[in-house]
Image (cartoon, rainbow, N blue to C red; front, side, top):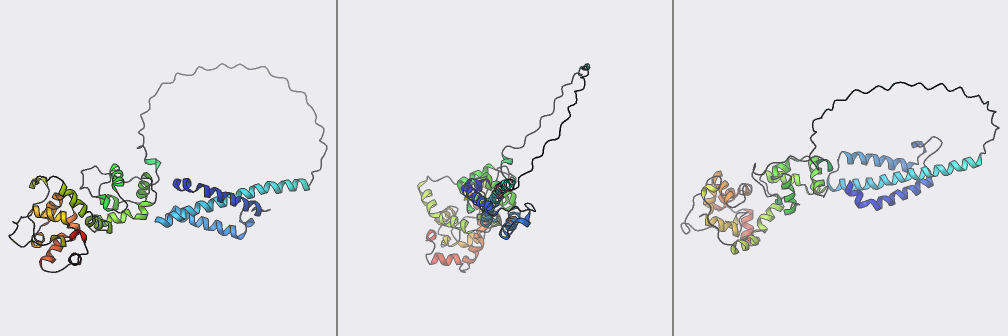
Amino acid sequence: MTYLFSTYWPWMLLALVLGGIVGFATFLRSGKGWWPDAWPGWFKLLSLLFLVGLVVAIFKWLPGLLGHYLETALLFVGSYIVGCFLGSWLASFRSREEIETKEPVAVTEPAPVRVTPPAPTPPPVVTPIPTPAPVKATTSAPVSAAPAGDHIHPGQRPPAVVKGVAALDDLKLIDGVGPVNEGKLNELGIWTFKQIAAWTPANAEWVGSYMAFPGRIEREDWIGQAAQLAKGLGTDVSRQADLGDASAASGFVSSAPAAAPAADGDHPGQRPPAATKGAATPDNLKRISGIGHVNEEKLNELGIWTFAQIAAWTEANAEWVGSYMAFPGRIEREDWIGQAAKLAKGIETEFSRRVDHGDVPTSS
């Protein structure tokens, strides 16, 4: 609401002045007072709509962009109504002066005032002032202050998690969360999709105010996106990020010095069995959704050349490869094993058809 005041205050002032002019001209007060019997019909309807909109805004029954528009309209209508009352109040002074000039008040002679002599002043009574008893100084226990900054923002701060307690998620896969916003969320102790998926509307309101963009979290549905990603379901943004960044990453990796292969014990799970190149005809692993040039090269370095090898992976193998390739949980979310099992049997998938037709630049 503070953001709306700071943005639209000139228009609110204009609505206040316009309401003052209308209120001065219509003069809402009558002989019965200020209450609705004196109001014209249009003003009663406007006041009723304002009260209904105020209730809807307080309980946040209109989320997102519609709620933002409703709050803005309430500011303008409220300013107009206040201006009408102020204008009527000023008009009441004008009518009062007209009544006083039209009806002269009869002047009566004041009654004679009898002056009585003052009573004698009694002598002052001196009372001894008691000496106050010494007060024993007491020290009160220090009161712990609330965490600084929490009360500045509306809503409720979401629970934080210490880094390392759970596997970190790439929060940039949520539409609207970039590197800067991800850093701010990490400062609040937000590291995983499950944390964001568990936010209440009060948490979203607090974070939106803290990050200086109130209402954006609701408009972009961060909570809904995080819930999908936490269940292993992809979103449009996550799929575009997985496919669109592969070509850029390929150029980066090719120019970087080759790193030494990681030891098996450095990653959770179990390393999958490797095969020698040439032992079987290599498959085009890029026909699996989520595998581009870079990921195919990493799999080849591990001795993974065919769909049949990936289809035979266990959950422990998928966990190890996901940690080795620095995206834990992605293999399970994108179902590499299920896609590879179909392709190993000669069954095409929708993504493999797009690759075969040349519709996926990162896999061609």
